[in-house]
Structure formats: structure tokens, C-alpha cells
Length: 126
Image 1 (cartoon, rainbow, N blue to C red):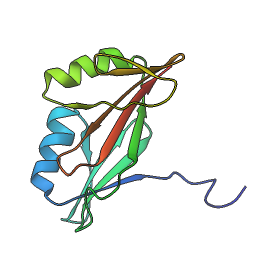
Image 2 (cartoon, rainbow, N blue to C red):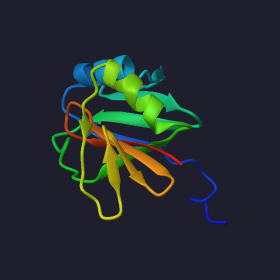
Image 3 (tube, rainbow, N blue to C red):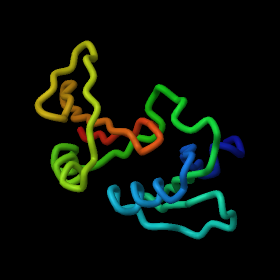
């Protein structure tokens, strides 16, 4: 096993404004802050993983999904997030259908939304 395979990885999200990011990731997504020794970095625990939110001039330039959470029921979570003001993205992918904000692909249920900097985040259940 390689050293990389034996160690945990963390997801990293670039943002321009830490205050707005804190409001979104804590207030809307309900993530719990974790310790950070750098003032330009916010860390959050998400299951056994860590999400690192950091200041960057390149925030929001990724046009692909940056982070995906696998949950028990994406439809239920989507309703809860929508109640907190999260706005969902709608895509026309081959082989998918959409009911409201939830995209269905076989047994998979998917929702996508953006943080204040335009980073694309996803929730999936199967």
C-alpha cells in the first residue's frame, strides 16, 4: 500500500470571503467547525473527513463538482437545505430525469448547489 493510500485525504474549497463562507458552511449546511491554526483557513468535520475552506483569488473557477456528500436520502436533505435558503442547480444529463430539485439516474438521487463563490457541491444517495 502506498503512503498516500494509507492516509486520509481532505477536500479543499477556495473562497474569496471567509465570513460569507462561514455563514454558508455553518449556517446553511450545518457543518461543525474544526480547529485551524491559520487565520485564512476554515476547517470543518464531515463524517470521518475534513473539509478545508481557504482564501484564494481562484475561488469559484472550477466548473466541476468540488465536493460530494453521500447521504441516506438526498430528497430529504434537499428539502432541509432548501428551507435554509440553499438554491439548487439543474442539469440535463443523459440518462437522468428530474423531479423538483432532485436528479434521478437509476437508483441514484443527486442534487447540486453552489456556495457563495460558485463552487459546485453535490449530495448523492442510492
